[in-house]
Length: 447
Image (tube, rainbow, N blue to C red; front, top):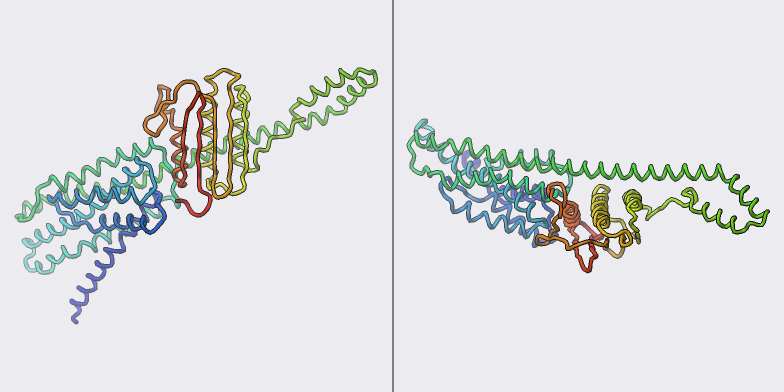
């Protein structure tokens, strides 16, 4: 076998293997944004989506392939990943833009480049006409560095974004997505070009398609930046609650020291009452002494630092609003939530409960919280009174405040965290009582 033939066979083999291996790169990157479902069936669905994106042949002026593969890719990603609708649409649009723009650039761009070179370099036509056969190699040459760069830039794990941010990403993704579809389907094909028309046809291919490709990659990186800011915001909230909790602990310690300092005086007074036979006054004095904050032991809710900090801060706020707070907590297993996530989940739910209680009569203000981590499940149940009917839009709660941009996102943040960890949450309202019930699996990996 000649060297030229061996090189040709080797390149063909690389293209064949790459067509089946490169979809795994798509799967790995998509897994940075959408939670993969467990199981071989869902793995194959995600692989099929990656295979379609990498191997789809797209020519300028041919709308069939790009439009026929589009709904299939979106549906396969929807079935293979556990995600909310806004996240699914935004991520699917971005990855389809990356794949479609690159395929169109390789498939049509190399073909037109070969035709231009046919007129410009007649003697080298036999060599350059083979360029079209190596479009898979070009795809791999472009994609692999892009994926490795994204892997270094993206965080090591997913972090749920609120729906409002996913909607923003989706709106920004619409421009390169629609632009790629327009260039491919609306620009005239160049099957029989002259040197001038072929060179003119390179403009949308060599300028617009690379621009859409890079825009989609930049937006994928933007998602990771937004996730980082959300993580920092949640961590800052947890730090604030921890600071409040430890400040309360320090105040309680100061009250204990003050009580110990005054204890001799208290005992002297009690002894005087008893010596003079004034038993009722002694009992009354002891009753007042028992109500001193220094006598009351600091509240330790469950021993979990994050929960103790959040409940300590929220319980103090509820006391100021004359809200009766009851918590029943039994944690026999580890909760599958990081500190900022657990803080955001409990904080949002308790803030909403306090806000609802503030609208009802003082005697009806009561918040009941029950936490269980046992037998493979983390269960949270929270109930509080509410005034008026809860507004809904489908499964989502709608705030009654005029400023919808800044309010009404607490329950959506809770839903995002729960769904990210493979759980479920339900908000119900009946007979003036609002209740939240959520479940999270404790055993095995996230699903």
